[in-house]
Structure formats: C-alpha cells, structure tokens
Image 1 (cartoon, rainbow over the protein chains, first blue to last red):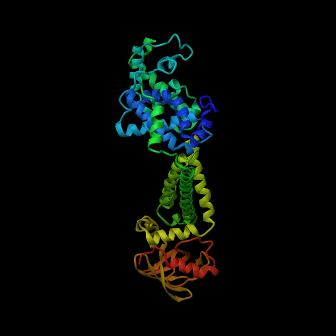
Image 2 (cartoon, chains in turn yellow, cyan):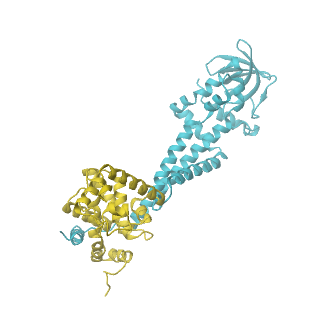
Image 3 (cartoon, rainbow over the protein chains, first blue to last red):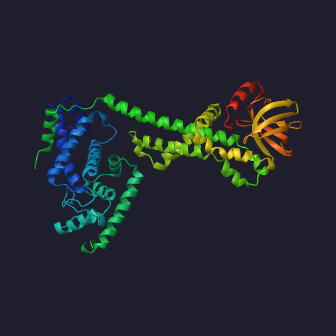
Length: 197
Length: 254
C-alpha cells in the first residue's frame, strides 16, 4: 500500500497520470497555499479565489505531461496559478485596485515587518490595523512589484523559485525585488507606515 | 469553505478531463524551436545581404561627389536589411524566451547572441551567391524596396561630377559604345583608356556604371567601367554569360 500523503510531488505526478485519484493528494497540498496566494495578489473574495483555484487544478491536470522534472512542482503550480490570475485580471481587472485583508504569511507575519527587520519577526508582529496599512501600501504598488513581494516575503520563495514562477532570469528577480522594496518603503513613508514600527 | 481539491477531482471525473498527451507538448516545443531557427535564418539572410551591399558599395566614389565621406557612409549603410535583421532578432528573442529554459537567460545576452548568430549566418551566406540573388528578387519584385534604392541612381547620375550609369545600347567600335542613361538620355562613351573593373566584356543590354568626365554634350570619356551591381572582384570572364544575364535584370528604370 503506497502512502500518497508523504510521497514527493514529482513522484505523485507520475502516479496521477496513471490514476486520477492520486491527483487529489497532490492538489490537496497546495489548496490553502494557492487560495492565499490568489487572495494576496487580487481583490477576489474567498469564494471566487476557490473557483480560480479549482480552475488552476484542472489546468494543472490537463498539463501534467508538460511538467518539467528540472523544476520543483511547487514552482510549476505557482507558475500556472500566476498565469491563471493574469488571465482573470485581463477578463475582470482584478489586480489593479486593492488586495486582500489577510496580508500576512502562513506564520502570521506581516509583509512590512519582514521587509523592515526580518530578524525580529516576533517583536514586529502586526495587528489587523497595521496589516490594513500594509495592505493599502501594497495595493498602490504596481502589480509586478506587489506580486514579487508576496512571493518573496509571504510565500517564502527563493530567487530561483520566483524566477521559475514568473519566467524571469535570477538577476531580474533580484533587481525587481530591490525596486519593489524601495517602492514599498517610499509608499510606506508617504502614509507614515514606518512610524508605526 | 469548500473542499476545492475534492471538487476539482469530481469535475475532472464528471467532464472526463484527460491530460494532454506528451506529443502535444513535444509538437508545441518543436514549433517554437522551428520558429526560432526560422527567425535566425531570416536574420542571417538579411545580414548576408547587408554584408553584400557594404562589400559591393563604392567607397571610393565619394571623392567624385560633393558629399563628405560621412554623408556617403550614411547613404551607403543598408538600413533596410539592418532593420530587417533587428526585427527578426526580436522574433528570435521572443521565441527563445518561449522555450522551456529560455527565460533563465539574460535579455541582453539572448539579443546579442541572436545578432551574433545572424551575423555569422550572414557571413556564411555571403560566401554563396544567395544574398545577391535575393536582393535582385527584391529589386525586381518589391517597388518599395526599389524606391529605397533610388539613392544609388541619384549618386550615379551626376555626369558633371564624373559619374554616369546606364544600359549599353550599341557597341559602336572597340573604343566606342552607346549607352542610354538612367534618365533615358543617349550618350556616346569613349572607352579607349578604360579600365574594366570586374573583367567582364561589354555587351548590349548590360547595365554599367562609368567613372570619367564629360567630353562634350552627349559624349563621355570613361576612365573606369563597373558592372551596375555585384562583386567587382568576382565577376570573372568565364562567368560572362551569367554576369550579362544577371545584369540584364537590374533595377535601372527603362
């Protein structure tokens, strides 16, 4: 009896191609992460994020044979999610206005605290109000900066993973993160976010 | 909160969604690589023609003109083919980025790499006659291109400055021939002291360029005669027929 729950993603892909039920174990691992990611970079509500996530999973299934073993499966599924969100953006202009209230990562840390002092996470734990300010700051950032900050600081992705997700060279990722941080700080200054920390 | 994974799996089962077969992606990747190669090849052809034009350009005639060397250079640069090459470099970049690993490479290196590949390809093509043949087709078939090449006619239609071009209409004697210039005027050319660049023989309907000076009205003393187009150093005697044929299809307006 195989234990699908502990099997590596890449192996589970091979099993999913043979048996669609195995696919459930694969996508279950990414369900919460992807819904959170969608909500962080769009303005959709929980229900709509779930619908987009479902579409992503179906797209992933259709394209399983295209999965490149050189990539991490997580990078590949985030890439599909990124493309799907862009498609939704084109259809419904979801990205440009504002973003979700839950602007904290899986450990409950705010983006602002991670950006200003990543070593002192617990002390800089933010309240819902502060998260709202961060949300406002992120909301006025251009989409390319917002998404890269979300991937780096909220999804804890490495530069290589971000490069694979956004299909950009590593150097461009580093430049983009630097610019995004600088933009974020400037925006934060204008709305006095820094004083609050 | 819904169980999205369960719903997705249910939908997959209900709608009998199947993963696209492997060959679907292999085909897609092959198309992208083919388009990339096609872009590089087309860029190479453009580079080959640009090299051909630069190599066969008369850098020495600026002395006969009122233009400076810089002005002449600006006139001679094959803009059309350079833009063509740059355009296809852009396509090559786009297709390369669309390949599986293409996004990992720096834009500047990909663009420079595509340009270098096109120039190398163009250099290889230049050793064949393909660039000349393709350019002739463009001159014959593309009016826009013909218009762009008009500067060449303008330069060579300056008899007062010692430059004349046209088609041989009659070989009068060993030292005299008649030509119809690009504006349709008839000239008698004195070829007694002429150097024939390219070692081709005078023949009726051959399009030529003449360096010399006006003797009197409608008479011109030729110091040097060149074929209208082509590599002066490669137009050999034993290729005479081919040269005539090639030159008979030149762009000189009737």
